[in-house]
Image 1 (cartoon, rainbow, N blue to C red):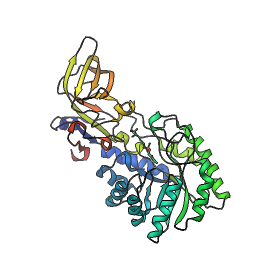
Image 2 (cartoon, rainbow, N blue to C red):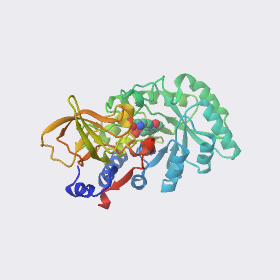
Image 3 (cartoon, protein in one colour):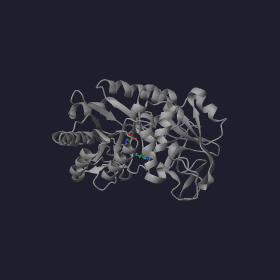
Image 4 (cartoon, rainbow, N blue to C red):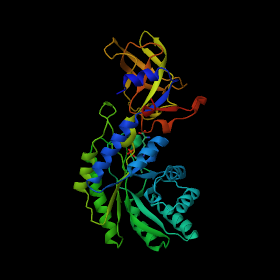
Length: 385
Ligand code: LLP
């Protein structure tokens, strides 16, 4: 996964850093774009997964739109050149300032998550003499069978409008002169590896689309969100099966010829294209446990501490065949959850060895923090080596 040239270059750099393989990113994006084109599906990249500018540039150049969840992301998307009519704005808590900013930018659509939000957007659009395009984010109560903390489409979740509130939602839409109804939006969760879950989603999308049409609304957009997972255990499985993913929607979704189907992929597009490269500061051999203490911690990669997420750990300074030892691989932060893996089998490791935490392109760099007054994490790109 890393060339010899990459590794000898890493040895001269200050660690930790995120290493981006922009060649792999490009390949992933093209594969996705080609697969989507087969069915005329539209992809908006979920910017929350990674808003590194060089990553965004490539995604924009692929022709994808941007799915944003804050005013900051809307501004950034437009600043890097995403077309305004390809920017969508979701999120349960859009502030008036963020809504006004998006209205000023004439973005394509607000994915609206409550009836009160509909009323506020209508009012703010009215003050500007504008019509805001909206899609209704519906909570479909479909179990994504993923980690509890990244499930979003169940009745107990805060996201979207629940089905029992839809009659009131339809009434609100009908009386809101400054709203234009575009369609319906869903997102049931992230890191979904059992694609059958999406068949259940399609059934619900079809039901809700019919519900709106029966009440006189034209559903122009069916936005089914994102969530396609990646193989964290086999990072060499670099490109997710976009073909199989889109095929499910082509088979199970009822789509009229004048309807658009939108996707909001994040992780699947960027996840495998980056690794966090760190150096071993110390090795502590105990009676019961051996510890590898890295110079990267939960401040650089929060997912293991937050979700017990797995990232494959490899010692890239050593040949894998060297004597294997079990280590707990931990960071330098003053928290017991600052641990990347327990009982990880690695070749005998020494101070100064380089360790790669793989598959960190999604929700890695963007979730870094300054806790313990840690320095900003830097990025290194394969194309610059
Ligand atoms: N659309 C909406 C409305 C979303 O909330 C999300 C992600 C996506 C699209 C993109 O989902 P993806 O294709 O990346 O699965 N920080 C967590 C993941 C949080 C996902 C939040 N929403 C993690 O590190 O696993």
